[in-house]
Image (tube, rainbow, N blue to C red; front, side, top):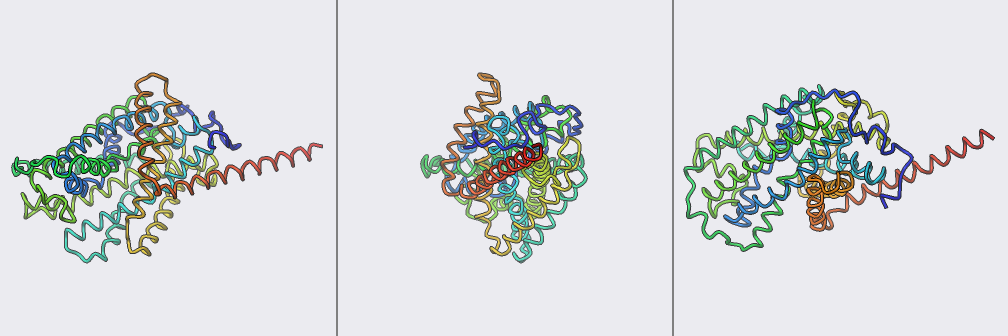
Length: 448
């Protein structure tokens, strides 16, 4: 369907599909870019997933982390190859436009802007929930703490990705320092007996742990939207991605090893697994450390995603998929303040829905992840058509396509929202085609 419905909007040669902007104004260097990549992947998962995975698979959860790390390499590598070759604010939607046409690109853009955006207030609320749980504050305060966590990234991105990039550099440095500190403090308390039996729940438990950690390693597509903000995208993006893969992989592996080695069968029993871990070895400062980690992680994730939403919103306006009023800021070096304001308003609406829903985050998380899977599937398919056949990047895309198709099957009924957004994209195509025909008919009549 998507390859046959081509709207009269921008074609593959439009600015949204340009392989390299003629006037490049990127400012992000390797350090800032790497920090943004790390933050977009090494996110809130470190607060809960090590314990949940250990509860599902026991010591074999370490194998699950290693497996997902290996599986994420083709996905991260493919996005890096695309972002380096075709830096554009539209990100994955731009690649899909080149390979599959305007309607498919609009679907992909809507999935990210309207679907993935659901996850932003979830991150803020999770941060608030952890802080209240750790400090013993009334849970009713969590939404207000979430709003406070949300303020800093919004303000930082209003002044441009350069400011946000430096803030992210500091936040990621603090996060890594805390993770390294937690691992260093807890390693001496690791007991070899906690690694036996290694497969208490069989390989089915490992499969469950893998499905949990798939979402921990999501986020590689974020960099595609700000690729044009790098000083040298072709050189910097692959290096930043490679460093981030190593750092994220080592971070999750180390945390999983100490979680299993220190807590053993008790891993995953508490609501805040990281808190249980540090309580064993640093009871006096443990709660404070975890509260700091929660605040840093949630702020960093939002700070990494907001520039992607802003740039994508501006690109959608530029390409006619949103009102052109929001197009300002799509060019490299510009700040997409109108699109950022729209993003903030959209997040506020989702936050209100969360309030009315009693902040039951499960449906929001499912909407977020199902849209991510749809984006990955479309992006990897486009990559197999765009990258030079038989090249390393092409092979990575082929492997990642198979992987994402499997995730698409696992998503199942949760794909309802992506399907509705895809339908909306088709409706826009039909409306634009009818308007174009009407305008053509009026023009023809006037000329006669």
